[in-house]
Amino acid sequence: MLLTISTTYQPATELGYLLHKNPARVQSFDLNFGQAHVFYPEATEQRCTAALLLDIDAVNLVRNKGNAMAMDQYVNDRPYVASSFLSVALADVFGTALNGRCKQRPELVVTPLPLQAQLAVVPCRDGEEWLRRLFEPLGYTVEVVQHPLDELHPEWGDSPYFTVTLSATCRLSELLTHLYVLIPVLDNAKHYWIGDDEVNKLLQRGQGWLEKHPERRRIAYNYLRHKHDLTQEALERLVIEAAQSDEEASEIEAVSEETSEAEAIETQSVPATEVLEEQAGSETGQEKSTKKRVNLHEQRLLAAFEVVKQSGARRVLDLGCGEGRLLKKLLQEKSFEHILGLDVSYQALELAQKRLHLARMSPRQRERITLAHGALTYRDKRLEGYDAAAVVEVIEHLDPSRLSAFERVLFEFAHPATVVITTPNAEYNVKYETLESGKFRHQDHRFEWTREQFQDWSRQIAERFGYQVQFSPVGPEDAEVGAPSQMGVFSRHESVA
Ligand code: SAH
Image (cartoon, rainbow, N blue to C red):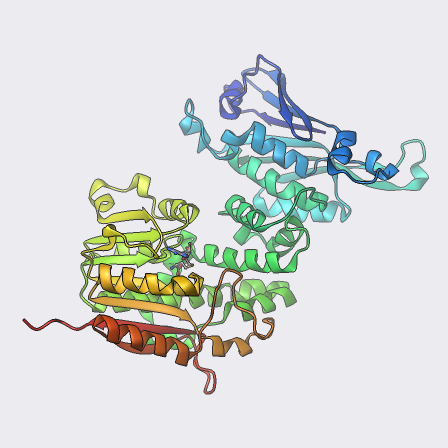
């Protein structure tokens, strides 16, 4: 299996820096399925080509699996075609370039370069059309040569194997990322175990392009080896991600400025699960529903934002801040002097850091925000001395046995004057046609409460810790089952001296 990457950027040999591989040397790497070799068939000022040659040990692969040894396990296309082995090799051998890093040429990392990638053999049973539908929306010029089954017997027709050349002016990391995700999608026979981590990998690598790709659904489905539940999860999370692309976010902000808060909250919410169904049913529905979906989560955030703002808080906590969507809004509001976002997921915080462009912030802005890694179920001194806390769609992720710890951490120790908590309203789940009864909306939810359950819990807390609490629906209200989300706003009783 051979992949070549060429550039005509001048001096073209800069490609060697970007790939962290010296054009003058042949280098070999041991991988657990064989060997990868990197060399440069050409390296001049005008044009430079790096080649990645994979030498897959098919026999060893079968043996390692401990399987019965059928003939087709030895005699198959794996050693010769671009498959997920190539993705693994790309991450191993060109990992730094894939992640968009280069100490020696940082400016080139972010520069779109004239690039060309050629994959010697790509298996694509769905034909040339599918190849084009995958790469053309990403801005590539796609050249395709389909190979006959047997050159000596043209009457046998074509094979499902293609030589593919992709050309574009883009960042090297983008090209590598697209290959990393889309090669296994084309091959459609991923070799390794698919678990939660694969969803994260897909979302991480898909950031910035997958959510806009017209074939995102099928890409996720193939990448996740046709696992419906994982595909669903990935798409749901992608949607949330998509809402965060700066362009859309500012679009929403513009819309929400025009609409009154109450209107925004009550009229536009569409349950994510319903949208997913719509998405599954029709392709054009996807585009149509993007805006509505954006509004769904957006409304919870706006509702929480508004509560915090109205409270007059100057120092604000966003607990379980996730990827920083609320933090971004909070930062834009000048009345907040300091904002702390805390999350148990380091990965989420890294995304938040990117979303907020922390690295490029002016020192004054930078001082206004702290990202903290920590769990809400342990007392944390960093959370003390704040006026308000937002806890948006987080409590349902906590283990019920740890809830009481969370209650004390927030209401007793951090003890802000205002707390806003949102959580799904389980009664509304019957409205989601694709959700089996008794199931939760999200894989990671540990519970989902009815309105009564949430209100009972909240009132007990309010009483215990000296707060009063008020409830509002979030999203369109149904006469029987209420709104999809519910919000409790806790206000601390001011102690009378
Ligand atoms: N508030 C964000 C994210 C909601 S998703 C938003 O509305 O966009 C739930 C978040 O809670 C995840 O980022 C998860 O990592 C975080 N979380 C779950 N358990 C946690 C815990 N024990 N401590 C802190 N954060 C936690």
